[in-house]
Length: 262
Image (cartoon, rainbow, N blue to C red; front, side, top):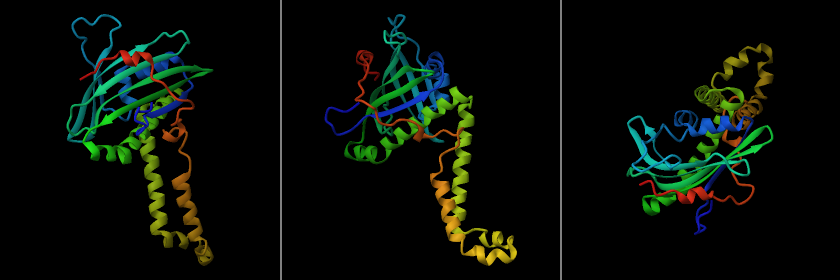
């Protein structure tokens, strides 16, 4: 989605998941399962239907994100889905807003599309939001928050893919990612400080002096591997997702039927 002003481009992420369409739908539409794989949310809960809301009416929900151990930012939203479409795809759209004064995100809207594709599903999202805090908020959003949100969305989509394709639970996937990050950091720290290098060379006895000349090359190689080697197959990675739409994406019509959640 692109803003009419042309000043800001909405976020887009697409992941191809080799799983049944109904399974992808269930893992993303059930709040209890959604919050397990989506890094952006700590809590997601449906709110009781309002007076006069009949079957098929848009569903209101509450979401929250724990930013710090003592700080949780919450908001509300409204969503609607199209499970049966003539072209075989499915769509879910939502509008959301947060009244919390510390939330950079003031309000926004977005959608999910589920497109059957051979033995899998192209699961994609497009969304955008309006930051608060005036000029400072706009600069902070462009420099930090928007790139972070794009990365978190893509990372979460790959986390979902691992859950559906390989049976790696979201909790296990997070542990895999943290361990891999820690190992890479230790390799970089070891290489940059030379920590324990002398003791390591002593193991080679008379060859230590000759190997010492190769140390800078070996340490440089170790840093390159730690920084640029692809993540393991059971570790989620944002780089596996498509971050730019192949064609100009349009929001589904159902999005325009949703009212402001505030």
